[in-house]
Length: 88
Image 1: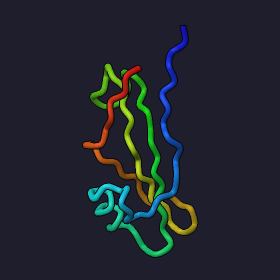
Image 2 (image 1 turned 90 degrees about the vertical axis):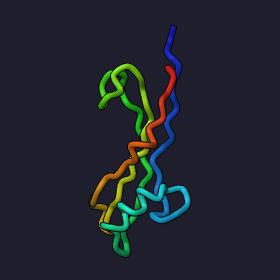
Image 3 (image 1 turned 90 degrees about the horizontal axis):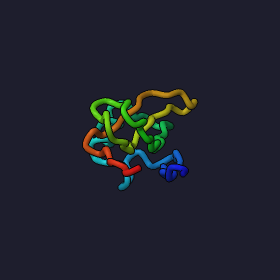
Image 4 (image 1 turned 30 degrees about the vertical axis):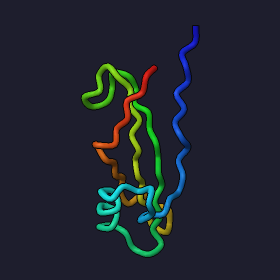
């Protein structure tokens, strides 16, 4: 019997100070942001038994990757309050 597939959205570019970016992330981005920077929304699925204190469950967390105008990574942010548990 095969395990169900858990769909995690694709990475995508978002407005750094748009409505879908949580205020706590916007505040962190503002510390590094300058014109030409861009932000990616990157959903990630943890491995069971291998992430932080989530030893027996899987979670989806949204990582927010801030890049400069040349495509160099500046910083990665996430909101620890925004972890979502997934059944599998």
